[in-house]
Amino acid sequence: MSNEQAHKRVIQGKVVTKAGDKSVTILVERRVTHPKYRKIVKRFKKYIVHDESNAVKVGDMIEAIECRPLSKRKSFNLHKVLSVGVEA
Image (tube, rainbow, N blue to C red; front, side, top):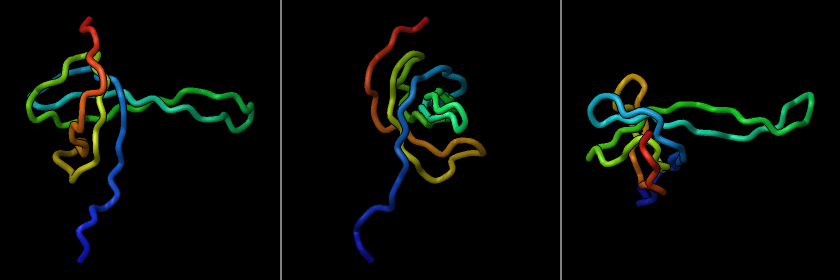
């Protein structure tokens, strides 16, 4: 067995809510080309991220890495904080 780690998805997004203990919701934006009109459009998806130390605040840009399922909808761990935002 090799010591290499399996490929894990890494996502970047902005923290939109901080509800519950050790959980934050991030909004991930991706740009895709519309199949008919060939215009670049934005698509958004929300992910629940596990934050063990309750370190992030609303408005922060973070990077999350895929992990085993921690609950029904939570399958990402906080990897690092990219930038600190302003809480509204």
